[in-house]
Image (tube, rainbow, N blue to C red; front, side):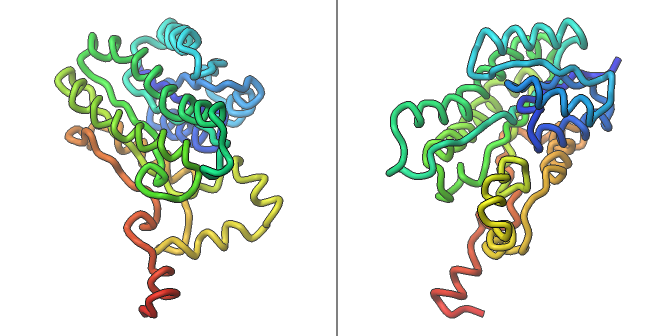
Length: 256
């Protein structure tokens, strides 16, 4: 019987790519998303009976628990959890109120904890599991979006705690920190500036940004047996931007 993978944010670009890759890897996948219409689009795109779309608001503990129970009833004990769901509102400290701050923290940090908390007893009983938290380069440095960034930094530390506490049960927990990813979430930016991706690329040492499939490929490896000793790793997937900026050196220091 194929293993179950639970993927949150399955209606978004990255979530869809992760679901597609895990299905190709032989998993049965339960996809959580707050949007029924987005899940319908993902189901149509995937075209697989091994994909179970579940409308779940990950800011609700009751809905997360119910979603996990539904996934288990259909496909058995989860072997993989990919905490991918997230969203952002506040763009700067000067343009945020308490409600916005709380909302960003809840969607990007607390939600991941809820999902982890829901699956960990099942994984402990099975004495195996792989959890991947999709963090961000924003959790490693300052790239805008303060509450989102604080949440992603918190997610990195949650990853380390889980790696240490759950490791003895055979559960590996790791985090992936993508840089800019070409997703549907950029639609408004592209509408306002069709060249936004080209401008953003200039800041990346590789001169390019991630595609959703890049994230999915790394998730596939991290949850695989080939990564059996990978636990507590915080993995930038960012074309080198978190390592430093040659653009800065060129413009301000005159470096070649």
